[in-house]
Structures are given as structure tokens and as C-alpha cells.
Amino acid sequence: MSRKYCFLSLVLLCLFLIFSSQFTAGRFSLAKSSSFSKKASILGWKAASKTKNTITLTWSKMKQASGYQIYRSKKKKNGYQRIKQLSSSKTCYTNKKLSSNTTYYYKIRAYKKKKKQIVYSKYSKVVTVKTSKASKSHSTQKTSPTSGQSTQDIIKPSIPDSAPAIPSYHQALDYSEIKERLLNPDQGFYRTLSVTTSLEEFPDRKNVINDNWQLYHLRIGIGAFSAAMNQEDDYEITEPVLQGLDDLLSYIRERGKNVVIRFFYDNNLGKADMEPALPMILRHIEQLSHVLDQYPDVITAIEAGLIGPNAEMYASTIANDPKVNNAILDAWLTHVDETPILVRTPSRIYQYLGITRNDLETTRIPDNSPACRLGLFNDGMFGSGTDLGTFAERAREFSWFSLQNSHLPYGGEVTIPESSMHDLKNCIPEMFQIHLNYLNYEWNYQITQQKWMETYYTEEIGTDCLYYGDTGFTYIENHLGYRFVLEDSTFSYENPFQELSVSLRLKNVGFGNLNKRKLLTFLFVPQTEEEKDRTIIKKEMGLWEGELSLQKKICFSKEELDSSTTYTVYLKIDNGEDRYPIRFANPLWNEELKANEIGIIPAKESVEN
Image (tube, rainbow, N blue to C red; front, top):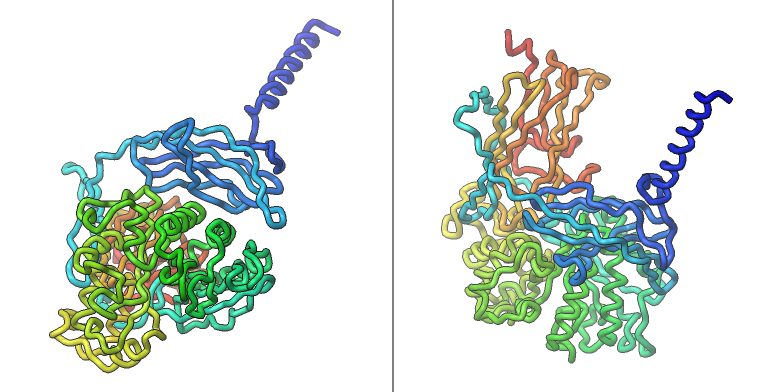
């Protein structure tokens, strides 16, 4: 063999050995994965990207795992808390609402369900990530709420004085506010949906769901798993019951509906002391959370419940034990990641925070604290000056909860037909103040279906002249939660088929706010009579949290839009995959597209002519 070929063979052999050693060392890990075991750890664990407020983490799928648990700390060696539990189909997670210019430490482990127990893998290596510094190119201004308007953050981009002027075109739309009943997600009058489980059965109640209602109060009796009810022993919740819960929530998602959910040990019979021992209560929360945490889009809120008659957290022997209260809230906040957790009275939140009413003026819960998800459900609403004991100092506590509820759902039941607190002139201002999202339509029917339907919104009650002469029920129903009205739409461009700037101004006339982030998608629909030529261009433009000023710049690739065609532009606000869309209170809704019309881009030849 010649020296030339000997040398070439030696080079190839060296390259092979180098590649093999690097692959063995884990440098080429794209194709690597592991199978679940107690001794294995997840591979490919790393930070994929970061911003000033978010960190995105990715990992390789672990075969045979049921799901993953992510932990975070601000210290490398200790202080880790679980921040997210994900299903086995996920290999990416974005941690949001972080502080800018701050170092965070993350680790992950897998878990596998085996009959009635859960087995965990080893923790991964620790990933260290520092968020970006806050940008100085944007200024955030806070507006003060007026009657019928919610507090929102308005972000306005700073534009250099030297920037060339771009032509702006105010869109000729019908900006009038409509009074139509809108079935938008996570709000409104609700109907009850009750399920009482046995040890091995979750009854099918899907037939209760219909198109007339958006929100349901899902009440699930799990007394079969408590010795006080079954007269035998405390049991873990069985797989058929957990699967039945999962099937029901999946069906509710398919129907595009939402639920506020509460679990009962007294099976909604009004009995005290029906709870199991505290360790089993906490175990039940953990079991239920494995299902609930898969449906943050479906579940508007979880009412902590569990304790006392009708799970209203009173009367039972353990109801007023702060240790029990705090343990239950800790369990919900630990095992459920995104969903708000609501308690029956403010005192339970004060207990958890370690404060009293005297501390309210100086207490604010940080946005990145799990406790920022703690809110109220009020089943004594407007029943008396204290809402039947809900509040001890109404004005003082309303002032604090007005801020806390600005990002949380709040609702419950109106009570005591003889009370004057639910007269329209008394209750409507408070509904705005405390950001009311939902109410029980059925209880108390003497108020919701009689009193409010027989009294009218007038100048003596409020200044919203659009509703003068309408029933109090119509006004309240149309204002529960958020209700966005488009007030202005302006397109700016030199060539809209290359680059388009959209500027929208909205008004929120509802009692409450948008409490979940939504995906913004702009749709460009060609105005053509031929269905075959109707190719819709879709542009996803990030997330929306309910800001009243919305500005987006959309760029198009060459030939993406046809300059000889006029396009109608729609804004789709939903969870993606056409789930849970938001409709503006304007006559601009397209039911087929599930989107709001915001303007047109005229064909180039029509502008020139």
C-alpha cells in the first residue's frame, strides 16, 4: 500500500476515534434518550432561550415516563421548589413572569405511575440561567380606572424624533358597542354540574353541557374516599375515578366550555366533619392535581374547598386550624401550576401570608410568588354588610382585594333575597371595584331571575346610557368578567404587502379583567367570490394579556400576499387550535373564522386608480 493511502487511512481512523469519544462523552446528544428508571436522569436538559422575564427550557424525552417535574431555586445548592408538572408528551417549558437580570437554577426529574404509587427518576444536573436586563427602549404607564373600566398596563414604544413618517390609514369600521350576550371564556353566569363518585366509578354527566352556557360550576363529591362517609377507611382516589375526571375535562375542552371546580367530602349534603385525616387530604390533592394540571385552559379556577359542609371551609372541627388551612393551600399551590386557587374567606389568605387585616395597606404579594394565585370565592355575596361573615371590614378589605383580584377570577353566589345590598345602585359599583367574573345563575334565583330581571338600569344607577331601560340582569350578565370594545384601528404602511403596522385601541367595559394570556393571530382573507382562491394567510404575533393599546408590525415575504387582491384583516384571539376565542363587543365578529374584523388592505391597483 502506498504512503498516500496509508496516511489517508490513518487520518480517517483518527477522525473516527475522535467522533466516537465525543459521542460517548455526550457531546453529540441529539439522538440520545433514556428509559425510565429510578437510577436514570433526563438527558438533553438545557436552557434554549431567555428574555428579561422568561426562560425556556428543553430536554430529551424519557421513554416510559408518565410526566416530568421542574424545580427552581435562586440558590444552586438548596431552596428548590416545584414550579411545573408536565405530561410525558412535553419536552419544552417556558418559565414566565421572572425578574430581569436575575440568576435562576433549574433541575428536572421524571415520574412514572405504577398502580397506586408514583416512582421518580434521579434529578438532572442543575442548569444555571440569568435573565436579560430590562430594556430601556420602552416605557410602561399605568392608567387609573374609571367606572366600568379596568386598570391595565399600556406599553408604548419609544419612536425616535428622526424617524421618517409612515402614512397611516384609519380603518372605516363600525366601532359602536353592541349589547349582545357574548359567551367569552372564563366568565358569566354559570350553571352547576354535580358528580358524586363511588370507589370505582365516575358517573357520566356530559349530557349537562350545552351551547347556552359558557361556564359551569363543577362540583365533585369524593366522600367515598373518606372513612367519615364510607364508615370503613380513608382511601386513595382510584384510577377509574381519576380517569373519569380526565375524560370529563377533555370533553368540556372539546365543547369549548370552562369550569370552576370544587371537591366535596360531604358529597354536597351540608354535613360537617366528613373529611379524612389531613395526610390523606393532601394525598388526594396531589392525585387530583395530576389531572387538573393538564387543563389550565378549561379550568377557570379551583375552589380550595374540601373542608366543611358543601366544602365552604367552615363548621368542621379542622376548619379553623391555621396549620390545616396552610397545608391545604400549600398542596394546591405546589401541585397545580397555573390555575388560580380560591378560598372562602379573606382570613385564610391572611393566615397563609402570616399577616392580619392591619397589615393590608403595606402588603403586596409579588407577581412571582405562588401566593399571587390566591383569591376568593364568595357564596355569601351581598347577603349582609359583611357578606354573611365573609368580610370583617368591608371597605378596607375591598380596597386590598381590588388589587389582588385584578389578575384573578372572583365570583360566587348572591344570597338573602330581603337584603338591600344587591339593589342595583348598591351592588353594581362594588362589582366594578372587586372585578366580578362569575355568578351562580340558579342561586339565589329570587335575586338573579326575579329581582334583577324586574328592576332596570337607569340614570340613578350609572352613566352607561347604552343600557338605560334594560333590566339589571342584562346589564350584569353583559359585564361579568372582561368585555372589550374596539374603539380605533389604524394601519400604517408604505407598501402593505411587504410591511404592515397595526395599531388598535380598546376599552374594557366589563367588571373584571382578562386573567389568561391569549395567542394573537392576524388573518388576511382575500376578497374573492371563488372559494378555491380564498387562501388565508395567518400570522401569529405573540401573546396578549388584555392590554388596551395593541401595536404590532407584520412583515410578509415576497409574493406571500397578492398586491392585486384586496384583503380583509381579522384579529383572532384564542388559545391556539381555534380554542377559546375572544369576541369584541362590536358588530365585527366573523363566526366562521372565530375572529374580529379590524380593517382592509386595498389592492394596489384600486389605490392607484
